[in-house]
Amino acid sequence: MSDRQSVSRGYASPPCFMHELEDEFCAAPARTDAWSDVSRWRKGERKRLIDLRMALGQDERRERSARIATALDAAVGRVSGRIVGSYWPFRGEPDLRDWAIRVIERGGRIALPVVIQKGWPLEYRVWFPGDPLVRGVWNIHVPAGGPAVQPDIVIAPVVGFDEASYRLGYGGGFFDRTLAAMPRRPLKVGVGYALARVATIYPQPHDIPMDVIVTD
Image (cartoon, rainbow, N blue to C red; front, side, top):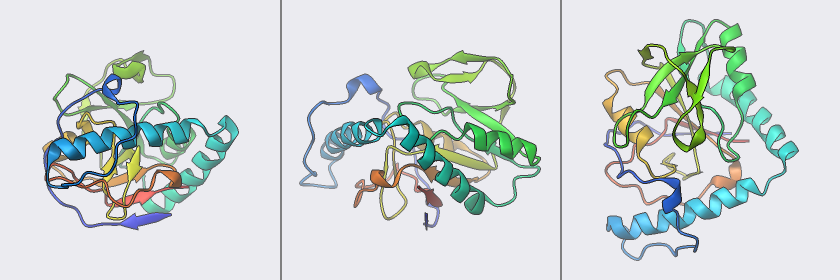
């Protein structure tokens, strides 16, 4: 399933990390123009939505990931000669590693995001099966080396998403910051489980919507 939304420009959200997530669920902000209220609400939603997807069984996550991969083929289209920025799955995210290998088999290249420093854009590095990986921020596998590249397509995992194709991430602002800094605009594809849909994430000026949201 996919929802289309026109591209808007923006900048990065304030960086934070997973250990800052609040345990309690936060009610919707009374004033949606106040960043402090929105930020507090988003922390509560992150906790709630991550708990929902972590409660899925391994087999169910695998089946949902396969459905997302099938829908991705239709959303992305031709991959031959293109660089696709994918990701290594983390905390119950859809696992698209098999799909990434099929992209390579069809003549595309896969690049994985690397956190260079807090507050900086992500760096994408080309990855092939068998290339050495190291553990980066949040213990996520990232390419050990290689030159930085700009993807033609960016696949961004979502914690949550809304009807306007805005993405709720982990709060570090890495994807927004990266997209805003790219000299060439890529196709932006958010991926996640349908249970991650919310009415709105209360988008702020720094939030950049996805072109397409693909779910199971």
